[in-house]
Length: 64
Image (tube, rainbow, N blue to C red):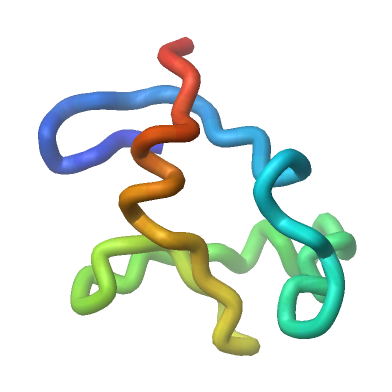
């Protein structure tokens, strides 16, 4: 991920996402790849409504 403040890195979502409920579809690699940035929310989202907290993904990013 690259953030507006030029911080960039990788976020290992396996450590932050329970893959249950709304996140269960993210186990499917093809569905996971449909992720996109919602500029209004300022974070990544999927069509089923799953999203990740922008502050948490920023803090969890590993510079790589």
